[in-house]
Image 1 (cartoon, helix red, strand yellow):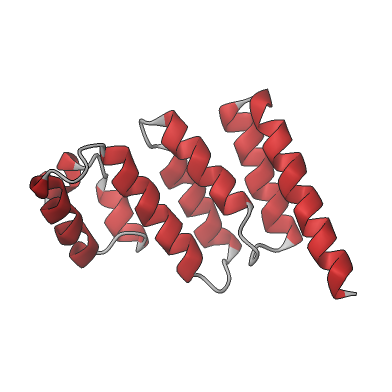
Image 2 (cartoon, rainbow, N blue to C red):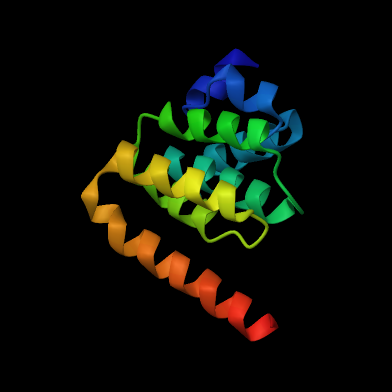
Length: 131
């Protein structure tokens, strides 16, 4: 199992956190071996994206673990893109949104401000349209 994780630049924590399953990993290795895509960051990004989509809510502890998982990734472009994707997730509470926004800015820098502002404005517009 460790060999499969390393081939796609996953750590054991991806499995332990539940973001990645052994079945998903096996399927991704099969895809990697087929030559469809040899960019390992694409697999990790897709795993995070699918995980975010599958959640109906996040508890703050789980969210903190996900942010640490993202921060530990060696591909900072993928990690920042995944964090922006998480920031846009509709199931985040306002407090969780602020947690992700703060993480994004402090981890990846000032350039993220425009993404944070846009996501915040979208949240405000969606909230306004519901009332």
